[in-house]
Length: 277
Length: 263
Image (cartoon, rainbow over all chains, first blue to last red; front, side):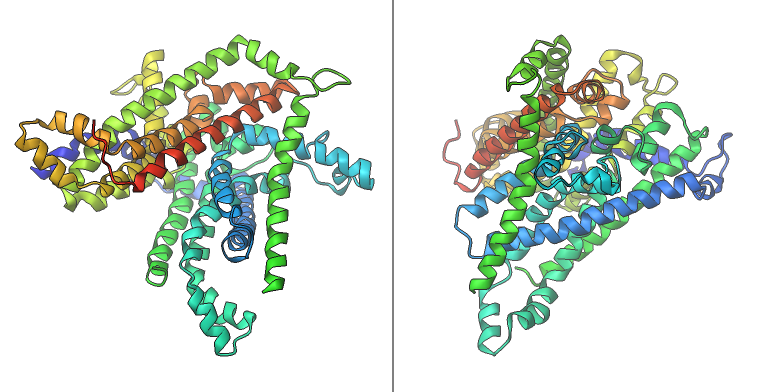
């Protein structure tokens, strides 16, 4: 009888999570008349779609790596950098806010900052006679989007990594230095080997986080930047691929990519928990 | 150690600059609506816009409904799993994590295929049905956070003893849940509720694709057509997120305290 109590939950999950997803996954392997086919998957290799995936992967990877690196530096500085005590709780609270400050308002904020008439753009011209738009930069580009994504990627990294950095025991550093290790040796031989599963796992999670994001990119660039979530958005609205089943395959591709990076994250986290207790 | 402290200050300084500059820029831009002077004109225009009021209250309503339905779904499940069905824990936890794995745009794509007018459950046929579908979608999006918050709350109290004492006093399952368990995990519920509110209030993808008059699509539309109002709205959205997170931290601060007040 124990299973009876979770029936409502299972019903909800099937109706609003599992069935809708399964419907798309199955549809990705069906032709228009409903028979089994791999043609939709094969059709994903057409240049427009491959380009969309490639641009999405590059933006997600760039924002994940940079977010990972900067988030790590920031978290490490706040936790063991010898900064005043108030910085750590401030950083944690701010990270909670900023990691949730994604979507349309974030796009507005970056247009006001680095758009053509943005504050930073105009101040750079005024003070240094340097126009970032003359370098080919626009907020609607690869770097513009990456820079915007970092606003929620860095804080997310800080939040994920804080427990792992807390687990880095002070005694290890002291022991290393007593045995004559330089700071470099401590990092390469002690800290990084303990931390790397957490670091890599967190970067993978950031990657999936950026890969599925729609609202920020859509509000920032409209449909001018060809990334997968935007292409899928247009496909749902108006069948721009002229093939509903190809749309399902596009969605399946997204699930596969985010699922793989999440699975790797979970596996790496389980791995790292053996060390960081 | 001296060098590492300088490095820490540099990291902190760059970080602070990157995070504060966009806020200053957005705020400054939002004040520039009247030529030649700083004013709160953009905010006044936004507040006076009936579509702002309508879409904002629509999203607040959605958020509150999401919180109530989410609690009604998650609390009995998490309670039951802890008390009677620990063997189902891996399955339930796995399902609650799925919304983090499957992108929101994919989930709503599935909704549009399954709940359209030619399907078994034609929810999108009526406005009310679509509203309900949107709300269930938001419950799904909030599931990972809500479940974890509630489960942490249940972990901190002695569920078994509380249940057995209530049972021996003659309470039925509904009374136990609403009068004993819920008050004891109030900090966890509040923290889950505020996070849910922050997620739902400006959500764009679900609302836009289900074509409902929510705050997120309104923001996007305004951004495409106006100059100064979007900045004012971005500042407001930031303040709402900040308020939610602040209240959440305040609420979860009580999580580690022993629950003594069970009124």
